[in-house]
Length: 344
Image (cartoon, rainbow, N blue to C red; front, side, top):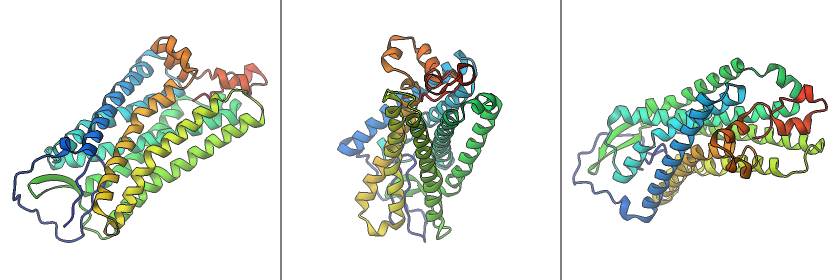
């Protein structure tokens, strides 16, 4: 039976068949700190944890306690909570990477994996919600002014979290703990059903990457087309920010999903390729959790002006529903379009 040791939330494959625990035959000695790639990814994951934990905590503190509650702050607060919880569970993965062994038991194996998937997918869905909201605000500014309410935003956020919960259920079902060659691993046991691995992998790929990416691309394409068609701005700043958002999403998530799909036919690929690819892909996917507050908050307005201002002023400018930039571009009547918000 072949195993791929789990580094965070990535998959590991098993041959469908006998999954009888194997008694340890020797004392496991962690080698991660002596392997350049593993050590590098370990350091990167620690950095992601520190930046993501502190950055999202800052967003939660300001948007949740220091700012007036609006539709935009509802989006940002929910996104920050999602990424914060994800980052809060990264120490389990860091320990697993360093020790090359799972020491937290079967319950935490299932719970940690499901919670991390919950927050990763809720983060993705919230990015989609923000993209759609920006698109609607640009295309239908008057309608958005009259219908964008905190209550509706809260309902949409709740629906996004419920969808994320449904996609995290497979982790509760399939995650398991087993001892093998002197070490205990937390892995996905797909031996109970022949097609379960493919179903889970493909459903997560479609719901967690393909559909969100198509929606995000569509929304920002509409925004760019609208701005150019109406000659609303001479500055390339909005286009650069939109491009950065799409590229960050694509770069962070594509490698992870590619290697997860390749793993479905693991017999056709060398073990080392899948092993290395999944580790790198998982770290890149995790990086999206600390990039979100940077891209969606700190790049919202002119960076130099934000840097000179206070932290609170930075986030107020980026999150404010008073969409000054877009209203200047879109408004034919300042009284009608004053609240159109499109700066990212």
